Length: 420
Image (cartoon, rainbow, N blue to C red; front, top):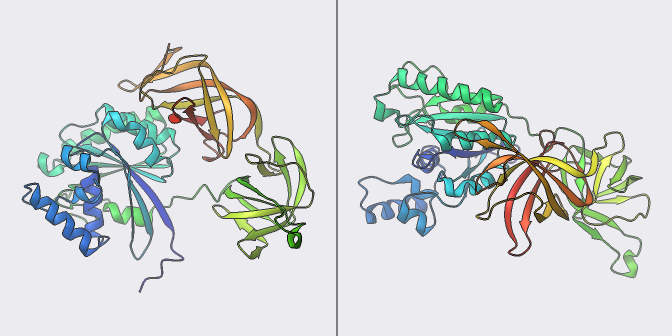
């Protein structure tokens, strides 16, 4: 039996336009990698027959909502877990329809790799460009362009090369760092788990082989240590009258007993005396562990404060510039006010200016737009009611990201990535 406890974990998401085959790819990958229980497969086979398919429609493994099955499109994000003898995986199957771009952002926000599907017949379309741009904005280090439905273009190398050249130009414009191209047929499983003899001109790995061996370093472990206070644990009885700790999740890096830290935004300096994991005392703790930290000094600390090594401070301020994905039907206008959630801290925020907006079709920047509409991408500046302790998103996904919330409806209206 394979021991999964010490295996590395890779998170990846799907991206691309509607009907490019994202759900089918994930279903086929799970099927061929033996990541489906017998009762799940039986249910999908029965559902496929009921809907008149002459084959097992593996896309139904992830399209779980009734509306998804009826319309044949993915609406919500479906997460699936599977493992091979070499690695564990968490996959997010995200929607391709432009209306659900915000759902795609949710699924891609924690991914290490994005699989961008491109229909070989249609090539790179607007939604392919939007999703690739968003994946890069979200800090995903590797894009794997799966040129799907190659069987419908006769496994043409010329067509594959044409799409590679087209996407290559896009990758340069959006600043994508690592891009790999794989010709596939998700419906038939070609080049997914095993190399296919239908593409003798392709000398690269099958998709799963690449995913198993991809050297994607986890940025949650690398970089300066960051710990946002989620809860203050106060004395609850006379027996523990001197116990005071600060609970939360380590966002990045490593903390050790004896470290001198600074509590931000107040700038108070103190020393770590204990790190508790349940009833276990630790000398060191690294991301992404959730722990309780005890300090040498009894200082004024509350939810939302950030612990950082005194030798590796971060930035503090109440004015930030950020890339934004707008997710609401109502438009975003300058001088509008919202609730902002940054890590574990809430604040009031006013959008001071809309600096630019991206034309997804051309990837040209439109300066000083009058508003942002649903699914628009661009750059804004905003001012918060209290100081935030943050890193640029490129350095730290947790301390460099935020969401905007409509206080009237409590709906999340935007996802933001801090630049400065």
